Amino acid sequence: MHQLIESLRGRLIVSAQAYPGEPMRHPETMAQIALAAERGGAAAIRCQGLADIAAIKGQVDVPVIGLWKEGHDGVYITPTLRHARACIMAGADIVAIDATRRPRPDGRTYAETVAELKKDDALVMADCGSFDDAVMAAEAGSDILSTTLSGYTGERPKSVGPDLELLREIVTAFPDLPVFCEGRVHTPEHAKAVMDAGAFAVVVGTAITHPTTITSWFADAIS
Image 1: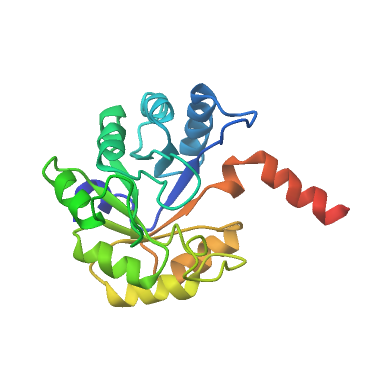
Image 2: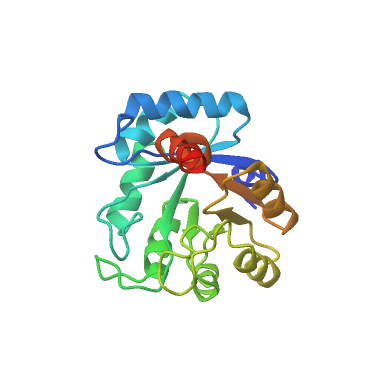
């Protein structure tokens, strides 16, 4: 296992992302949030967009997992080889890629994309939506498997919290690969449950770095 990935074993990864039109949609702001997360104990930062990757890489000492979202439907998380290479050029230590079995915009398969990235010695995180996605991603040579897209591709229902069932399936099937749990990890209790279920590491985004959503949870609770 690559030393950088080994350093994330049993650790918390924080996803610092804001979407177009949101108040915090600025690379400098995301970099400040990433730095705050690092000081709080984050072992790595996951972030979106070339400007954010570059800004965050310049602020933190921990590894950066970079991705590039384009569009909103189908394959939009680092959808092509061009997007992946751009993330690496921007400073990503690991590139996160949609690892579903859906058609990709550039016509390449996921396996073909990974094969090209491996020629550049890139580390690839596979964002999966189902067990079958994880099988495909593992066979393609992915360095990390993740539950990121569970509940968003139509293959699995959207669980209230993290998809522990899918996590356990993947961990059992691929004991020698690091499996991250990402998606709807909203409380410290969720994070502990994820680790107890066998996750190599846990990724938390919204519950730490998205104040609009966190505020809405409290507002809804008292209304």
